[in-house]
Image (tube, rainbow, N blue to C red; front, side, top):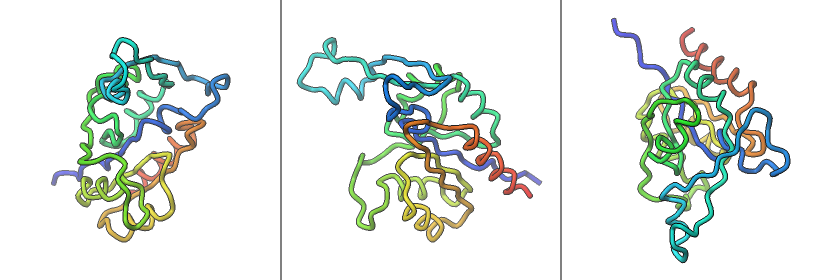
Amino acid sequence: MTPPPAPLLLLDVDGPLNPYAAKPHRRPAGYRTHRIKPDSWVARHPQRPAEYVRPLRVRLNPGHGPELLALPYELVWATTWTDEANTWLAPLLGLPRLPYIAWPQLHQEDPDGLHWKTRRLTAWAAGRPFARVDDELGPQDTEWIAAHHPGPALTLRIDARTGLLPADFATLAGWAAALKA
């Protein structure tokens, strides 16, 4: 008998992996600052030629890549970075290319006040167990997922000032282990 597939770990970047809200002079321990110019960043500045667009500051903890790979999940980018996360961030984290969720529209308002990603992520998971890490989750998202997703789901709100912490990795590992029990 074939074992069930691993649960999905739906990863947001800005907040969980890039603690963008940390004060500039208080970079969280273990993080390195990178200056990068993804195409999507340049496109957000159409009034400037690309060579004059200042690079985006991204803080990443290179230890997070191996920690994520050690978790019993199938990792998926659930971020506005889409495939650019594979180009720009995965190498800095020591991650392989990951599948990503394509967004038909970014930041659209939800009629029920859900985070704009919630419905799409839940549909994309197609009933598979998943854990979602995001800095913009609210209780209404957790409640909606519980009511509309037929499989187990964990929503883990991450503080955008600190990014993923050891306790978050422990929560993710514990939840995945409980699925197997």
